[in-house]
Image 1 (cartoon, rainbow, N blue to C red):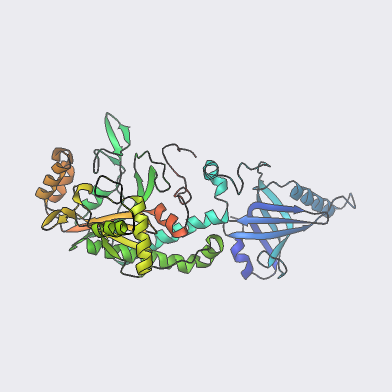
Image 2 (tube, rainbow, N blue to C red):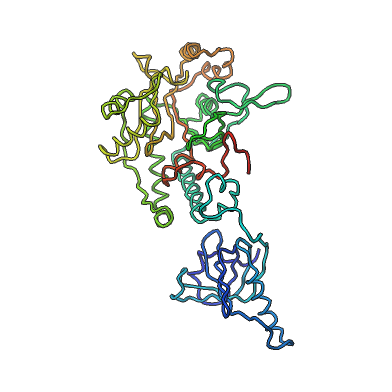
Length: 447
């Protein structure tokens, strides 16, 4: 590999020889001097070349080389990839970083077509068609650097707290909760299903004695939804822990994890996020506010909004309104809505002792949007069977899962959280299409 210097590292170098590689962002081809803004994955730098428009001496090799370089720069198309060797010079008059590279030699590694198919004002859908070009934008690049920092902070927290990382299968013999929203795939002589979540498998780790587990991996929902927060394939952040007393223990874990992630993002990307997103990262204080769902419904009702649902759930507008209330009353961007009705929760959520109409569960709302569901799980096999039947599920179809509980299992609970939603809401973006590397929805399978 050549001795390439990243743009972000140029400022620390003294004036002198340097080699940089990247793609052409702009070219200013003036009569006497040429300027090229070269961008790589870390930043942009100005390249400068004194233009030679004609040969002074036909026998002068140096003059011929300078003419060839000038002509090559004049022919450069936006997006072409270059390697340039030259002389680094610090000059405070240069607006772009206070330095420039005087071109000595230029190699066009890969030419670009002269007209790009997207522009700064292209629609999101058009930009997604040409995602590899869209991602050259420094703002888009930053999204995935922030994502990397978040995931690293999650893992660091988990490792520091003695969690085990697992990788669960995404091909399942039966549904994890119900047959709704499942993708069926042919599997030799039978049918398999793409996993909606690692729920059953991360629970399996509890009787296995793992204690605390986590996974960051893909999940699939055959949901024909076109909202800004839904996808048919998404990255799910999951954790499950043993020996809990209630869902309160899961919420405490959830808080600590997010505080660790937001702290890391603020420390590493605070300045860049201010520049590109006009965003000041706020690390949430603990504990996050907690409001039982019934009380949250009462609050939004008193504030003039009646939830137009026939079931016992909260709708997206209700979530926005309760989040606005929490922001006003507590100055907090997060709120746990707790104690959901058993009628709208999966069969494996533990129900309140003495009130089976409620569950030991929660949804976590961030900036008005639900990003996660968590709960204490039911670990008594006889109760699980009864609750499954209440949901219209046949215990015979769940035998592999029910077996987990027939040989001893500790009280446990956990959560699943959508990574792209967290990013979307943190960065103030309007759609998870912006915060998903390659989005998949009902009408998008390419690129």
